[in-house]
Amino acid sequence: MTPDHLSTTFAALADPTRRAILARLSSGEASVTDLAAPFDMSLPAISKHLKVLERAGLITRGREAQKRPCRLEAKPLREIADWIEHYRRFWQESFDRLDEYLYELQGKEKRHGRRRK
Amino acid sequence: MAAEGSEAGTADREIVATRVFDAPRELVFKMWTDPEHIVQWWGPKGFTTTTYAADVRPGGVWRFVMHGPDGTDYQNRIVFLEIVEPERLVYKHDPDKETEPVSFEVTVTFAEEGGKTRITVRMLFPSATARDYVIKTYGAEEGLQQTLDRLGEYVQTKA
Image (cartoon, rainbow over all chains, first blue to last red; front, side, top):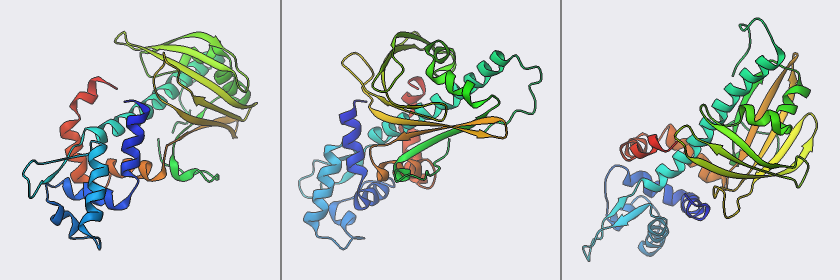
C-alpha cells in the first residue's frame, strides 16, 4: 500500500458520517435514500460523502440508473488493518528477540521471574 | 500492544507498544543505538537485517534491508531526529525511491522500573479518527469485522 493510497483511505474515514455509512453498509447494500435516512442531511450532502468513499475505493455503486445501490468494499479497510497488524507483530516479535538477546548478553542464569508485558 | 495514551498532545493518534526488559537502562538504550546490536533483534521472528549505513545522531540515517523468512527483502531508511541518552529516541521512517513507501514517526522511551527497563514505542498515525476507527474495527464493529475477515485471507500470506 502506498502512502498516498493509505492517506486517501484515512482521509475518507476521518468523518463520523462516512464511518456511519460504512457501518450501515457492512450489513448489506443500500440506496442513497436508505443511507440518508438516519441523518439530518440533504441527499446532495450524503451524495458528496459517498463520492469521497467511492474515490477511496471504500464503496462501489451499482449501475442501475435510478437507485445506484452502494456496496462496501472492504479491501482498503483490510489494508489498513493489515498495516496495523504488521507493526503490532513487528514490535511484539522484536521485543521477544530483544529480550532473548539481552538475556544472552548479560549471561543470566535464571530465566523465570522475568516480567513481560 | 495497547492504545495507551501519552502525556503529550498526540495521544489520540498513536499506537503504543510497551514492555519491561530485565536489564539496566543504559544497556537497553545501547541496543537501539549501536548498529551491531540493533541487527541482532530488529524485526519479527525469522527476519535478519543487513545495515548499509548507520549514522546514529540527530539527522543521521540508518539505511538497512530486512530479509524476510520467505526471501523477500524490505528496504528501509530511518532518520534519527532526537537521541537523548539513555532515555529517549525519536526517529522517522523516511522513504526514498528504493525503500518501503511508508512514512511515520516513532518515539521510544526508556524508563527505569525497579532495576529493570520499560521500553515504550509510540507510533504516530496520520490522523486520530483513522486510528480510532481501526481500533474500533478490531473490537466493537463486529459486522464490519466479519466482512473484513471474509475478505482478508490474502493478508495471511503478506504479514
